[in-house]
Structure formats: structure tokens, C-alpha cells
Length: 230
Image 1 (spheres, one colour):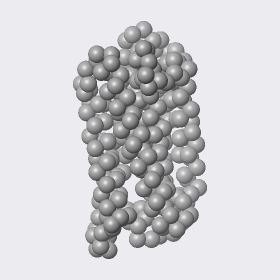
Image 2: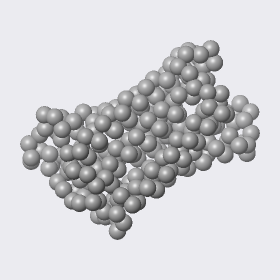
Image 3: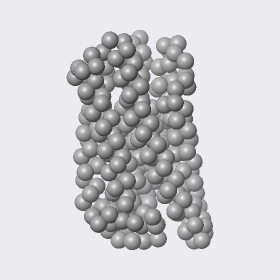
């Protein structure tokens, strides 16, 4: 199954959406929410790291990692390293992003893990980590047999896309949850900040969608370890 568009060309759309989403979440957290901090008497500044790291670090870098295998006109081994490193960076930043939410809650005496957003978040980052470790061991080092890699590839791809779609959906739930809290605390439902958060969520969904479209489009060449196996 493939879309009749070259992946390299189509990938410019999600790249543009990634830049837009990154700018929007930074404007929200720095301009409207007061900034970012690892340590602060204002615990909201600690929480602000969560959406920034989860969107830019986890969703965007994770999406770029997924697209790299299909869109980059490079040798397979080079794409494999890029794919691996970008996913590792996304995983690390995602873990840090989740930690900042726990840190904010613990220092603010707010209960942890009380929402579907938090439950899904833990499940998604766990599956993401398992995917990365399995991919590293089977496709990178020490590497599985040719038969094992061939059999594992379709499942690795499908599970990876499934986890990524869950991550994008959960990020959208996170924006909704935070905006609802803010509006219940008096934020203007039709104010600039509310519109910004809603549009950031929409851009996040569009970015995720175009990541999938890029995966389903035509790669520069077919090989045994590309998404052409779909």
C-alpha cells in the first residue's frame, strides 16, 4: 500500500507543521504561562516543561525518526542510525517530560496518575521503550538472523505506528485536559491563549497524520528494511 507521492516531497508538510507546533507550544508556555524552570517556587513553571518536552521531544522527534526511514535518500545503514538515534532522543526527552509532570504534582501536593491521560502516557512510553530496545537488539546490535529480522519487521513497523498514533492522540487529550483546568480557573474560553492551545492541538494531530501519510508514500528506493513492507 502506497500513496502516489514521493515521501521526500510529502515530508516537507510535516516538517513545516513540526516547526509551527514547536513555536506554538513555546509561545504558550513562555509567553502565556510565564516560562520554563526545573526548580522554582512557582511550580507551574516546572509543569510547563511537560508539554514542551512531550511535543517537541517526544511527538516531533519521534515523527521525524519514523519518517527518516522512508523520506531520506540515503543508504540503508545511514538511515538506520538516524532512525535509532532520533527515537532514542525522543524516548529520553519523553521520559524527562513525564518526570516533570510527576515533579510538579509532588511539589504541589497534587495526586499522580488519576486521569486517562496519565495512564495512557505511562503505557505509551513503556511500549515505546520496548520497541526501541527490541529494534536495537534485532536490527542494529547484535542483530538477529535474516529470518528473524524479516519476520519481525512488519510487526515492528505496525506496533511502532500504533504506539505513535496513541502518543499523538494522548498529546491532544493532554492539551484538552490542561485547557479545561485553566478555563475552570477563570481563563477566557474565547481568549487568545485558549485559541492558541486548541490550534496547537490541531497542528499536533495534522503533524501525526502527515507522518503516517509520509510512511505510506513512495520512498526513494525499496529495500528489505524500509516501510515498503507495509
